[in-house]
Every structure is written in structure tokens, then in C-alpha cells.
Image 1 (spheres, one colour):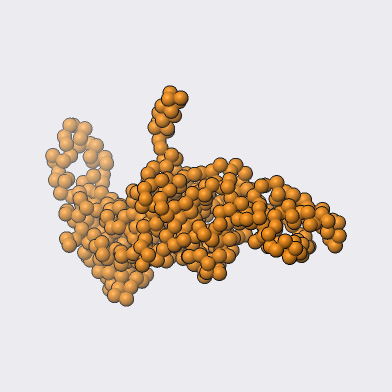
Image 2 (cartoon, helix red, strand yellow):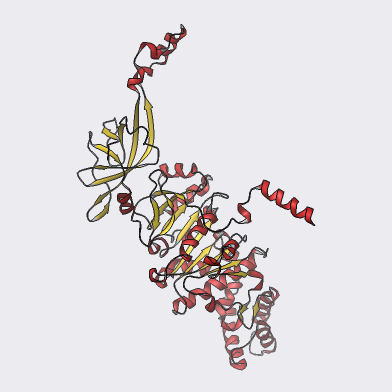
Length: 496
């Protein structure tokens, strides 16, 4: 490799956190902001990222001299050999040191005069801890053009958060991730995945040829039925968070008696009928329980049997899409999500279903930074966030408002993939949620173009900017331009 620069001394460097280098003539056409470079140091092979590039020329330092000379129509370059003194000076941030034994932090600065090279693709893969053989390929490093293949365990076992403002590509990235999971071979290990699809954006996965269609099932939220017989008193109380401990305890006794008298097959209306004729219960408790249960009955969600049978849905290498786009009530959405997540968690704890990934679109709707009674599904999601990794059940939280997502849940996501975010409050929430996010990185997040993202956390050894690859499935209606949507509507209208 030819060197692209040489480390120089400045008033504040080189240090362990930054250094500058003058770019060689041959390196001028290669060096770009955001590119990775490497150089030898006393500690080992140092990997750094170019943060800024300055173009300078000593002949143009004094503006008044340039102005006066050119007043008479004389070109400054015709008098002085200015072009010989054009220089590019790049400033870089050390990311870490690569030794034979692995990755380490930078503890000693590079030496002035050390030659700088573009980072080798094999070196970058090893440095960032990528999995070239079995990793999930979500994109590539923009300037170095290295495929970004992330080890599935490192990415998902300790939960994942995808954060970005609306229209920055969150769902597109999630679709790419799901394509990778659906493409995995049996010998590499396959998960079952459930997507909570709030806006109906993922249906294209079920319509994209046999490669995915045979392993993708679409579940309409309006057809979901919760099985009353498998719900405990505490799980029923999850749907009515204002129930008192006394009411919950009494409900437990009633459910036990109803279960015994009905051979375990009963509906919510059967429980209500039993309470109405029960003489043991305190009248005030009776009225309160009937009020809570009548309210649940009015949702039309509860029945004797579960629909669909969640245990039969969960197969290795399969994806289920829970489409909630036709449901307007946030409370109903939360009840369905709370029930399904609870059921899958219990099934996974008992080893009845394969390792599972729950992809939660608009996660701030289901687990907000708000009081418990305002989010029925919050408690079970927090439980999975805290305990899920022990049972190989992972969460992928997707949100456009990180500041509204429960801090306790967001902090459990050990890997963040962040696309463009500009809201100061959301940027502050992201900064607090990950110790690897610096002020400099926050500024870069606000300037990210659509389709590019920053990966930080346990999935990679150092913060990594990646350009998301093109997805293989067909476009969703939500990715259509407004012009094309208008033309399609008018064409459909004319045909009618």
C-alpha cells in the first residue's frame, strides 16, 4: 500500500484522542471525511477515522495582499507559485488498537512522522469484530466499501434499538435485518421473529416470492383472540392496572373455582356470571371486579380459545407479522401486544418455542416514559428487557421519539443503530442511553443522509457508520413517492 499521509505536530496533538496528518499528493484523490485509516504505533496497529479535512495555502493567508494585487487585474497565481503550496491536512480520531490478541483502547499517541495508510478491509472487519462467514449483512462502510456483517448473537442477544426521525429509514433497515434472518441456514442457527407492525409496512415480506413467502405469516390484529383460561389473575390485572391487591387476590380465588367447575374451558362472561352469583365476595369488591371485567368484555378481545395458536406460529426461520394498522384504539393495541409478548415469553421460558426476536415498531407507544396506567403493555416489555437474554428472547425497539421511550427499556438495549435524528431532546435521550455516544458523534447523527446509520454498542468494537444495503423485497406503499401515489390513485379512479 502507498501512504496517504504523514502525522504532523499541532498545538494540541498528536494525543490519544486526536491527531492530524498532511496528505500526500497521491492521497489527495483518495482521502474523504469519514474514511478509516491505519498506522503503526508503539502499542500496535492503530485504527482511526477522518473527522475533518482542511485545505490550506500559505500564499492566501493574508487577504489584504491578495486583494491589493488583484485590483490591477493581476492574477495572484501568475506572480507567485501558489499551486505548489496547496496542502490537505486531515484531522483524525483514534478508535482503537488492533493487536494479535484482539482489540484494545488507545493508551499512547501516534508519533509525528509516522506514515498513514488507508485501512485494509480485512483489518477493518477484524477491528470492528464483524462476522464475515455467518454475520447478518445490513450494509457496507461507505468509503472503504467493506461489507458490514454483524454476528447475530452480538447484535440481538442483549437487545437492539433502532432510532431515527420519521422518514430516515427505520422500517427499511428493519426489513433488511429480517431478510437476513429469513435467509439464514439451519446449520447457522435460526430464530423465530415477530414484528409488531403498527402501520402495515411489512406486508411486502409476505408477498415477495417463495424465498420469503413460505416462511412469513400475516396476522391481522382484528382477528386476534385472547384465551381467557390461560390468563392468571395478575395477567388479567395487567389489562386493568388500577385493580387493587385485594381485588386481584379475590379474582384469583374466583378463577380457581371457575376453572375447577368448567374443566378449564371458560370465557370472560363465565367469570362474570360466577361473580354475580358468588355470595362469599365483599359487595364493594364484587362491584369493582364486575366493572373491570365488563370493561374487558366490551373490548371483544377475549374468548375460550386463543386465535391464532401462538405456539404453532413460532418456528425456526419463520416470521410472523402482527398487523395492527386497522385498529385505532391505542389501548386495544397495547392489550394485544401485552398478551402476545407475555405468551411468547412464557413459551420461551419453558423451551416450547425457538429463540425469539420481537420487533416492536413505534416502541414508545407500547412502553412509554409515562405512568404505568397509561401503558398496559409496559410491564411485560420491561420484564423481557431485563430477563429476556437469559432465555434467548430478544427485543428490537424501533422508535422515532427516543425521548418518549421508557429509559429502563432503552438502557437495556446494548446495541443502538441510529439513523438521522435532529430533535435536541431526542439527541439528548440517545446520548444518555449509550456511553459511547460523544458530542462529536451526536453532531454527525444530525447530518446523516437517509439510508446511512451509526452502530454503537456490544455488536461492534467501536462506533461504525454504515450505508444500509438495498433490500431484496418489493417496495412498501409507504415508500412510494407522493407523485406516484397521486398518479396511481387517479388511474384507479378512472378505471372505476
